[in-house]
Length: 238
Image (cartoon, rainbow, N blue to C red; front, top):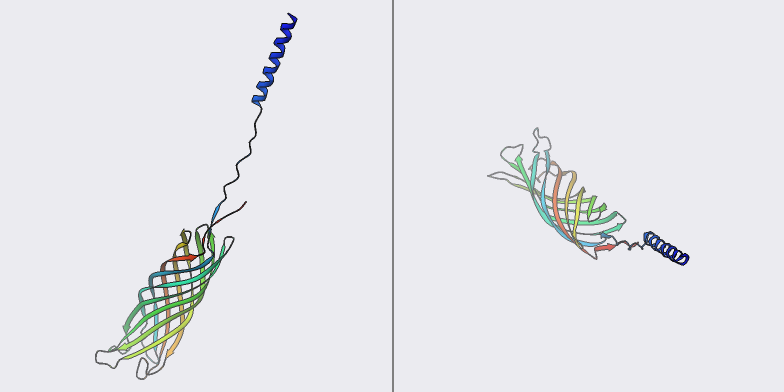
């Protein structure tokens, strides 16, 4: 009887110990984190763009009581080339662009027999860019030098007709959003303002006797697509 009791006690103790071992928490090593894929904006790029422009041509003949200021508007299309360098979320860059344009408008000259007209045929710029990247989306501001090829005319049905061209340098500034929809491809939406100051067309250029003070300001909205060489995602290391 005594041996039976000892045997039962031993079996009970081993069962309890086994149950306790089964109930004890078991620890397993967590799997390593999956590396994050970060969009890479660094690299040279080239692209195309198109859009529209509008603005104001200020045109004042010397001594005229009435000015011939007028609004201008039209389309533009061209391309751009540049380079981005990314440091963390900040993106620094340089860009040059050029567009064929047909931004025009007209108004009656102070001599109502004549029509005074403006046609901007080319817009270009060379700018710096500073942006903040939220993954594949880049928000940026930009500014630098702007260029315009502007052509002016004062014409009448019976003549005489006057024509004057002016290549103008000024400033260009704006902002945009660019979206990297593939590793090396991105699309952008961009607003720009171009200011070219005031200059004087000499007598004989737009009138037989009078000089004319001209001032040109243009705003544009463009959409574009860029291809970036050497871009693509970067795998962040832990």
